[in-house]
Each structure stands twice: as C-alpha cells, then as structure tokens.
Image (cartoon, rainbow, N blue to C red; front, side, top):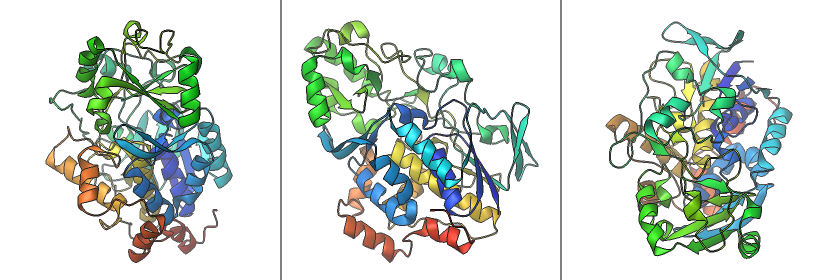
Length: 433
C-alpha cells in the first residue's frame, strides 16, 4: 500500500485525503491549526450558479461520500441572492466535526497542530516532510497549504493582521511545502495590478442583528439590506480588492448581503463597525470573535505553484497541489475538485499508474485546464470560479452549465469516468467506502 502525506487540512486537503484513501493509499493529513476546513470554517456557500454543475459532476465521479456529509449539514437549500441562484448554505458550526469524523471513519490518520516546517528532497522527488522534530515519510505528497498569510503578508499587502480564522498568531504562519521543496511560487494581483487579494466575507454574531433580520435569515437564508447612500461609495472601493470577483456586482455596493451559515455571513471583505451600526437592523452589530472584520481580512493568493495538467508540480515529480496552490481558483467546491484530483494522482504516481486528467467536456476538467492557462499566461488578476465572473461565462458559452442531474450524470458517463475515484481503489484492491 502506497503512503501519501497531505499537508493542509482545508477543503482541498480534506478532499485530497479522502480521494487518496479511495484510491487505496495509507494517508496522513497534517493540519497547522486545531481544526480542519480552513476558510471553510467561515464560508458555507455551495451549488450557487455553476458550482451546481461542478458539484454534481464531482459526485458522479465518485466523491459522493464526502458530499453526503456536507449535504447532511446544510442549513438552507436552493437560496437565491444577488447574481446567484440555487445556492446551498452549510452550517459552519457543525461541519468541521462532521468532516473530521468522516475522515477518521475512512481511515485517514489526522495530525492537527502539526505545522510543516521543512522537507527532504533531491530536487526531483520528496521523501519526507517535518513538523518540528517529527518526520513523515511517504511515496507521494499533496500540498494543500493554501496561499494565505503569514501575518507579515497581511500587514504588507492588506490592513494588518485581522486575526482571521487561520489564526496565525496562535498556530504560526502558513508554510508552503512547495516552497520548502525549492519551487518558486507565484502571487495573484488585484484588478489594478497590486498584490493583496482579500477574502470576500466576514461574520457577525447572530444575536447582534435585529430580531427581524434574524427571523428573515432563519426562514429564507438571505437578507439584502440597503446601504445609506453616503456609505455606498466606500463599499464600491472594496469590490476591487475581493478575491471573490463573482460577488463584485453593483448590488453588493448598494446593499449589505447577509447569509445564514450559522453565523451571519456578511458578504464584504470588511466593514468599519461604526458605519455598520448606521445600517437599519444592524445598530448593535458585533463581529464574531476573533475576527477583526471592521478593519480588514486575510490576504490570499500569495503562494500559487506552477504545475502540470495532472496537478503535479513542474519540478518535483511526486508533489501534487490542490486548492489555492493550483492558481487563482476561488471557493470550497473549487478546492475540493482540485484537491481530490491531486490526491488521486498522488496515489497513481506512487503506484506507477497513469494519472487521471479530467476532460474539458466536463466543467471540472475545463476549469482545471483554465487554471493552467491562466497560470502559464501570467493573467494573475483573473480569479476563476464556477460561480461567476469570467469563468462562469466560459462555462455557459461552452454549454457546460446545467442544473439537470440526469444530464450531468450522462455527461460523466459518456466521458467514461463514472465513479473514477472509487474505481482507482478497486483496481488496487482497496475496500474504502
């Protein structure tokens, strides 16, 4: 049985670890903090716009086990909000223990509070990575350490450390496994060319919004609150710094869009508290601790790894990348798609089998190809997501967007890839559920 080490326990790392187990490997998942899911701990938006198609393709490809856990923790289904249709919202308070328990049931060996700090390699292959004095050997590795932080980058390119969910002051800054292996990584930019793309939302304590807003959010999952005209200009300026350009729409400058994900998800990178409390229904608003949402947010896309079509790094043959390491790929669904392919191909490489490259007849395959195109062309101000902006337009132009589950299943079947993640394990004799 091959051994795989996944560094980083966000959605990409979780999907990589599960896919590697499905493919028959012994898997160790190393996470710097004390919880899995990374930004997924404050995220929660799924299936909006083209993410519906990508999700159902991912399920048909054999990742249904992970999605069944997610779907069991949804607070709202089929929610519409400005520019976005048929979104699902998961509960950020229940999702992490549910996912952790699922991975443990699958036999993934979890190591939290385990911050990768160095690696052993010969320039072509990794043999081990270390967290402090503890070394982890493997046949292949997945770097899903993300592209945020550490604190100095948030100060240099943003508004200082906003004490985001990544909690660098508590657990130490992110360390890139790829960079430790000697790989020169790339940084994405804002639309104006400056470095410093900021996370796109923050959280309010649900008890701090008005009873009327709480009721509306509980019943519908969404509330759109008009901004006073004098606050709209400042809100427009924020749209250019967002990583999530699918939300950089006029409606988000003219209103505050609130979503119910357990906390009240405020769809803006940050908003000064004194101004926020001038908005009807938010007179007593308070940001969820420890987030400094009145000042700033985490700075992202500072460590993207050049890679090949199978998500293998360009220079280290047994190092694969997922999530934001692949490029300016935005979102939980996007992270899970890339992470799962990285995890599968890490096992196939370790076993001497041919990698899986998803075809561009599928949205998930076309998106991974598009990430490669963006990286090679140096178009690093482009943020790619299934849910909006230029890539969703590309999906629709190519006829890839669909909300018909039967049609999506047929498309995967026609590609000969139904259950491919599970088939890889059966071919190796694995029996993971």
